[in-house]
Length: 577
Image (cartoon, rainbow, N blue to C red; front, side, top):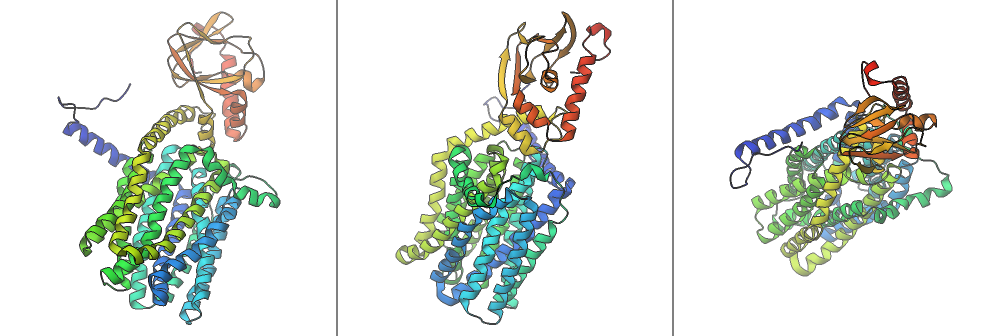
C-alpha cells in the first residue's frame, strides 16, 4: 500500500509530515554510515581513498604555488594542462587493466607507482632542480592517479550486497572526498607556511604509499570483476569505455553534466590562485585557505547528501550539484568581498559532494559491470582533458575580460546545461526507483541472495513484466518450460494432477523445476486474483545460479521440496513455494 503523507487543508505538508520526512532522512544518513562500518572491505577501500585524495589535494596546491612562482597564472594553467593531458590519454589503458585483473591489485600498483613519482618530484623541488623535471614527475604521478578513481569506483560494487550498500558506500566516500578536500589544502597551507613546497610534495608521496597499503587484505568475489583477453586486445579494450557511453544514453547524460562541472573545476584551479594573490591579496598560503573553504563546504554537503542514501533522487541531486559548482562563482565575481567569496566557495564544495555521489553511484546501476572500470576510465580521461583545456583557456579569458567577469561567465555554464537536462534527470530517478523494487524482489529469494550487486543488478535488468487475469493459467503441467517467475503482486494456486497442492503470493517464485531438471512443467499455476509477475528466461536464470555454489544449492533445495509437496494441500502442514 502506498505510504500517505499528512497534508494540510491547503494541500501543503504539515509540520508533522515534515518532521517525519526529516527523521527518515536522518535515519537514512545514519544507516549509510553503519553499513560501511559493518563491512571490513568497504572500510579498507574508504581508508585508501582518503589517503589518495588527501595527497592529491596537497599536491594540487603545492604544485600551483610552484608554477605561480615560475610564471604567474599562465604557468599555473600550462602546468595543469601538461600534467593532465598525458594522464587523459593513457588512463583508458590503465582502466582496461582494471576490467581484466583484480581491481584491488591494479589499485595497489597505481598507488606504489604514484608514490615513487611524487617522491622524485619532491626531491627535485627540494634541491632546486630544473622545474620541468619536477613537472614531469608530477605528470607521471597524475597518470597513476587518473587510473585510481575509476578503478576504485568499479571495485566498490563488487564489495557491496545491495543498492543501499552501494549508495551508502558512495555517500561515505563523498564525505571522505570532502574531508580530503578540506584536510589536503589545509595541510598544504600549513607546510607552505612552515616549510616549503617540497615538504608538501613529500607528504603527498607518503599519502600515496599509505593508500596502497590500506588495500591489502581485501576479500571479495574477484571473478565477478575480471575479464579475459590477450595483450593484443588491450588498446581495443581501452576505447570500449568511450564506445559504451552512447550505447547507454542515461549514463552518457550524467557524464556530460559531470564534464560540465569538470570544465568549471579546471577554470577554478587557475582562478583560485588569481583570486587569492591578486584580487584578495592574501598571499600564497591563501590559495590553500580558499581551496580548504571548498573542502569545508564539501564536508557539510556530504553529511546532507547522506540523507539521500535511499538512492531515489540521485540524478536530480547531481544536477543541483552542477548548478552549485557554477552559480556561486558568478556571485563571487559580481560581489568580490572576502567573506562572501569564502561562503560561495563553500557552496562549491556542497555541490561537489552532490555530483560525486550521483556520478559514482548511478552508472553501476545503468551499465554492465564488465565495462564499468573502462566507462569510469573514459569519464576520468575526458574529465582530465576538459580540466586541462579549461586550465589553458582561463588565463586567456582573464587577459580579455578580467577576473570578475571571468568568474561570472564560468559560473553560468553549469546551471544552463542543467536547466536543459532537468526533465531527463527526473526520468532517470524514476527508472532507478523501479529497479530498486525489482532488485528487492530478487534479493528476497534464497537462490539469488548470494549474488553480488552487479550480478543481481544485471539480472533485474532482464526481468520482463507480465500480467494475468484471475482464473488464467500462467504455466501448465506437462508443458515445456522456458521461464522462471516471481510474483510481484497478486495470488495464485498450484495444481498437480487436478488437485490443489499450494498457493503463492507476492514475493514467491515458481518455474525453477523445469529449468533445473530439464523436464516438463510439474504443475499448473493459476492466478486466483489479478496477477503481476516478473519473468526471467531460462538462459538468464541458469546463468545466474550457476555462479555462486550457494545459489545453485538454494535453487535445488527449493525444487526438491516442491517435488515432495506435490500432493493435495489438506495432506500438507506447510505451503512454502
